[in-house]
Image (cartoon, rainbow, N blue to C red; front, side, top):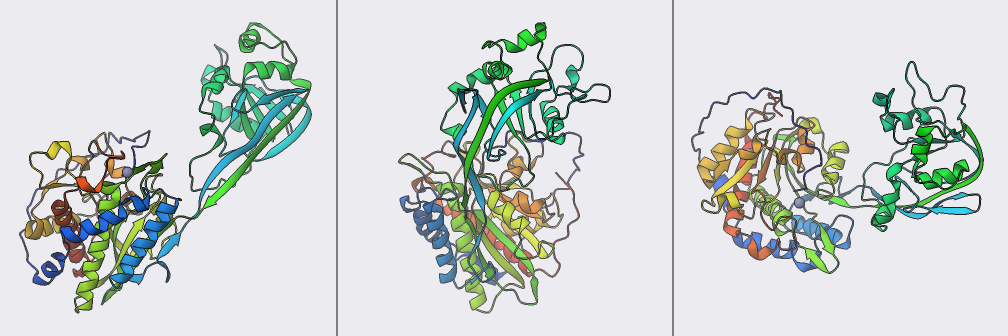
Length: 510
Ligand SMILES: [Zn+2]
């Protein structure tokens, strides 16, 4: 389970359809039950002590611990008799990037100004450049509207443009969107944009290490664009050639005349180094029989937060619990197949990485699917099913079900029937409410499948005091409950894989 995105969209005006509550009657299937019962607390415990043990070092994406976990998972799939699920390989590798600053400075005449002190630039968006110029274009606010144009009579092609971050009071204040103003300078062919920023003085108090390294990201931006540098008024004053003045902008407001063409001598250096990583999703395949072209996915993320210093974030519940559940569900299906009870539809058991970095592994899979998404019937995603949240301390026999009714009317009855027949958990739909502020529906890997209108269920125990803490450890897992919850996923998957009709996709709930 990833942390909440900073912005959670609330689609407040969508209608919520009234749902008719029905309780599907139990339908026993002795064969399914025989194999479901092979998913035991003992096996899950044994797996989890390895997956969430110190040897895996918290499984952070792109670390040795993550690679070790991937190799272990692949080995377990192989031992259970499954086939490699990624075009003959166990792992689907995907690129992630991270940039670090090598050197960046702005030198005005013989005066050198420093990155992180006198200016800042977006490390991820920036491109390496080293430019020497004898003039820059001052475009004041950089505003372009139908009736007003700061670039009137200015040709900025191949030039460095300087604008003010803040818009003057009064007229055109509503045209002050900085992104639009920067875009206007880019569109006119500037090679670099200097933005005079009144708040740039606080750069010195930023974590200097952090502003010299990006986080992991998935997409290289291939559109060429000029770098944007946010500079202090002092640096701006040096460029303009007036006395160093931290109140430059006020001075300009009061009438300090700045020519649009400034003769000066400026060298801008921006040099960063890119690192490419190759983390992976691990996929196992179990071929179906008469409906083998259709796929049933069972997923969990095997990555977690890694280490901070020497402290390991074990991620036993998040999502060691789901990873072990996928391993044991896969093994149970493989056992059934070996005894002549293989599923009609094919099964794909996928453990992804990159989840804690922003669902990057599942995003990559759904953008580069190994099996046609049109033939992918469902994704049953398991993320944190080994613990009890504070709301259920008195009545622990529960599981949150999220997303099951968003795209298919067939899925909830199947899951409820499996539960009523075999596992008898109290299914809690609290977090399925689209207005729930936690927004859990958007926060794990199933969401990437749902984006492609593939019906999903997200199985979840809720958060707890050890969520994303080094104390999320194997000793705190309730293994009997973990086994029962994993069995529910197994029975639901069994039904979906073997039923005559593919799940309908007939709903559009958010
Ligand atoms: Zn998490």
